[in-house]
Image 1: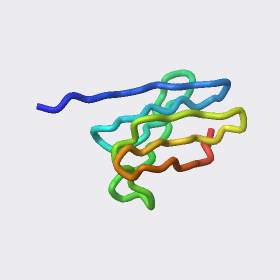
Image 2 (image 1 turned 180 degrees about the horizontal axis):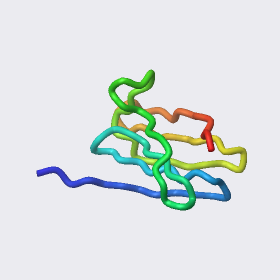
Image 3 (image 1 turned 60 degrees about the vertical axis):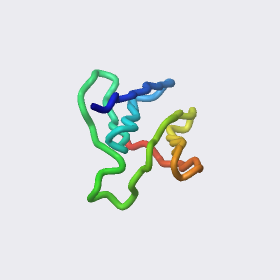
Amino acid sequence: RHTRYISVTGVQTCALPISDSYMGVIQVYADTGHFLYVLGRNDAPYRFKTPTGIAVDKNNRLYVAEMLKHKVSVFELAP
């Protein structure tokens, strides 16, 4: 049985990204709690390998730290 580690971050943005390391995705929710979209699905152009840290800057850029790839990727968050 696997334990799921979910980390949450948010700054003054209308989108709240949630990192799911077990599933290898970033789920993005509105500030109201409604699901908006997911980054990193199998059918997506980019797949994450254990996204363990996320941050959002004041320009709505999402930073994703990937443990198994040893890198940080940057994405523009769509509202």
